[in-house]
Image (tube, rainbow, N blue to C red):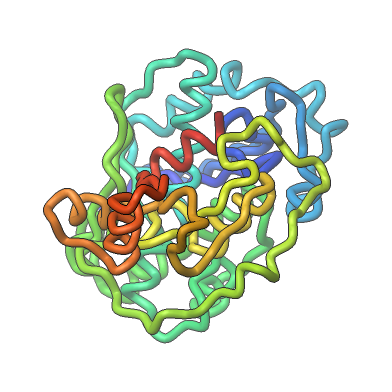
Length: 311
């Protein structure tokens, strides 16, 4: 039996997922054959963060004559919409697709997707972290990180390696074995690829005061500029530190605890649903207490956070 799937990776011009895709790579496994495709993408507007250029080496000059996402999409959609698509930290890559489709007013097709990062956390316990190079090294897979086609190859390699290790023949079987739901984007929105039961981790203190902006160009019109933000719960699209860095790059500040100086408490989607059922973290309880005492502290979801970051 031949396994059919597509591995995908995007590189972006900035931390913004909207208007930011600058490179795409796909690896198509179909009936025992492998087909690869890569393209540079011209973001609109043509704006790059120095930090991202340092990561992947793609510059504005390299993409100024490249096609836009809207121009490329019909060519790539053919391979994506009839397959299950895998990516490492798939929430990132599929939010790039969703925001890019919205930018060009293209209706989203139905695409099922699976995250090799979530899979690795379940299948390979005990790694120092679950970044793509770390997972690849543990499975003896070569990895040239932050090259879209190379990263797609690596994600495909992780799938094939773990299929072989577990003696199963489908991604659906891996998902069932490790209790990970298969995600989907569709015309009305998306369903995340998520781990059915959270892995218990020792909480790690992050000294947010040591985070420095990646650029001197601060967007003073952004929703979170000059705001103090606290995070609670598990974020689906970023680590807590990555999300905090986005706030710092905008010109906001991040705290570990809710105080009278906090403007927004940003809650992971799963934890927000628990909040709706009356189950609250200590940070949520503190926020409500401050609000009842006249302090203007607002609770917003991770989706609201991303929408306002990208606005």
